[in-house]
Image (cartoon, rainbow, N blue to C red; front, side, top):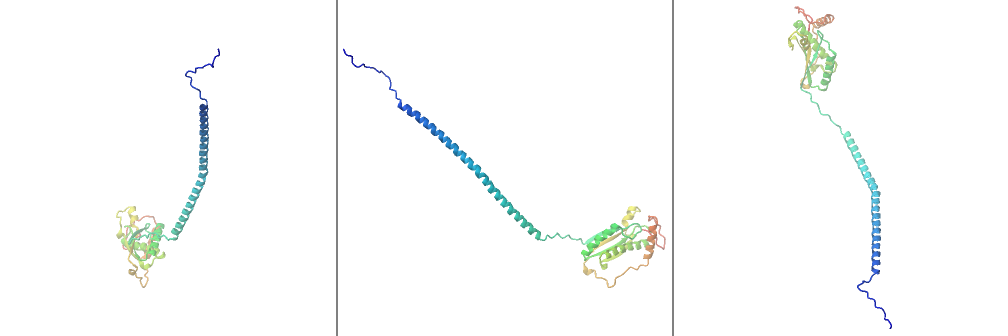
Amino acid sequence: MQKGPSQVSSGNIAPAVMGPQRDTKDVMILAALVLFLSGLIAAAWFYGQSSEQIKITPATEKVENGSVSEILKNASALNQAEASTTNSTPVTAPAISTPDIIHSDIYFEVGRKGLTDKGKAQLSAQADMLKQHEEYGVLIQGYTDQQGSASYNKQLGLKRAETVKTELLNSGVAEHRMKVVSLGEEGVLCIDNSVVCHTINRRVHMEVRKIGQEHMAAPAVATTSSDPSEAGIDASTKAEETGPPTENLVPLNPEPTPGS
């Protein structure tokens, strides 16, 4: 009895498919390679862009620095042009107005008609002003303190005023612009018998007034002082210079005694 081919029952066994599984692995590997290559390309591109920025920045800075240098040069040239224009333009100082009336005092030592160094400096400055302003005239007033006789003090006040006039005359001030008077002890400012009062009263007061040249016509003949009492004053002054420095003198009439 021959046996036929054996019948095998497979039951519910699913067939195994090998081909598709291998294809999926290949795709995944290929995708990974693509991603890896893409990453390398991206990294290379980013590095290349950074290098270009680094290379371009110094050139930009050079251009900017060159522009700044050019601007500074132009500004310097403009400043020099303005400075030259300013220097070429004359700058006029504001005019200082001189008052119409100026008062000043020149002080003297005891019994003296000569000027002190301070008095000479004052008169020098006053003469400079008068030479610049010829429309001003000067009233020169001589004073003394209360010591001595009234007549002697009147003569001494005149001598002091004449001394001031001579100093201004020697400095270039025209004689016709000056007027000399003496008040002696009649014009004392301080009335007590202190040293301070005596010092204040021994003075020549100068009143410089703006009156105009047309009102100061020069005299036809220059006048000179020829007071015969001047010799007596000079002799009295010399005698006082050699005596003690005091002004406590008792007036003797009718002859004047040295005093203020």
